[in-house]
Amino acid sequence: MIVPYPAGGPTDAVGRIVAQGMQATLGRPVVIENIGGAAANLGTERVAMAAPDGYTIGLGNSVTHVVNAAIYSLKYDVVKDFEPISLLALEPVVIVGRPTLPANNVHELVAWLKENSGKSLAGTAGVGSVADVALYFLEKRFGISIQHIPYHGLGPAVQAMMSGEVDLIMSLPGNVLGQAKAGTIKAFAVTSKTRLTGDPDIPTVDEAGLEGFYPSNWHALFAPKGTPKEIIAKLNAAAVAALADPQIRERLVADGQDFFPSDQMTPDALAAFQQQEIAQRWPIIKAAGIKVE
Image (tube, rainbow, N blue to C red):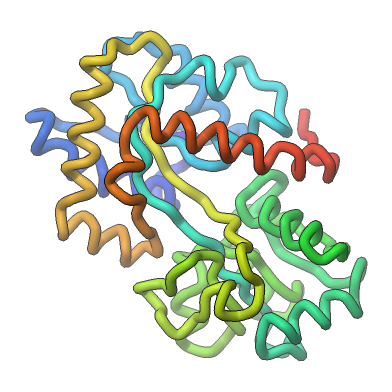
């Protein structure tokens, strides 16, 4: 299983947990190979170019299989060069702010952002990252402007926010739940329909008055184009069995992950979901003029 990010990050953690769970069904080890670099494009390209024999699969997400195709000139097609295997887990975004931010709920935050349109600062993990794209969604929703400040990962961005260097972050849960519980940052809402198991005190966007605002990151398995359907079916069965294991689910929940309904874990459902994500995200990304060569 190729993970297109360095070892130790949140996507790598998901890959290792799921790989371990798939081994029982497949009857053989599932080895993780981390191929980071070029905003995850190097590892994703390796999957696209691999032999379609079922022995090389890739862990993808909303960045690798949706966002990157809208901002980079890629050597592969994120739809045509892959066979979908299964959706795995969903990772909502937590809207968090510096402890001194003069807002204590979403309504006050939006009012403050409108008052400071063009002056407020938000940390991101880089151009095209989940945090970066989620900010564009927020700007579009309220007709405001926020300055995007890129860091080398969400960890440094969170540290910058805690010190007051930036005002807010649209962060993945694993990077901020500890600080939110400790009260060293302000957590305004989570972009999902249900509260996080890891911190049920954070309201959902619907509860907080930001109804229907659901930017998120998701993880899924893909194989090279041309992988036989019977192999895809076997890999899908292994992934579904892994996600049904209570211990696997518990470990993923601890990392801030949520789960898809079982009827959305088919190859066809993943294909439809990816197309839906492309239709929703590409227009906003392109309208924002995000482009990296």
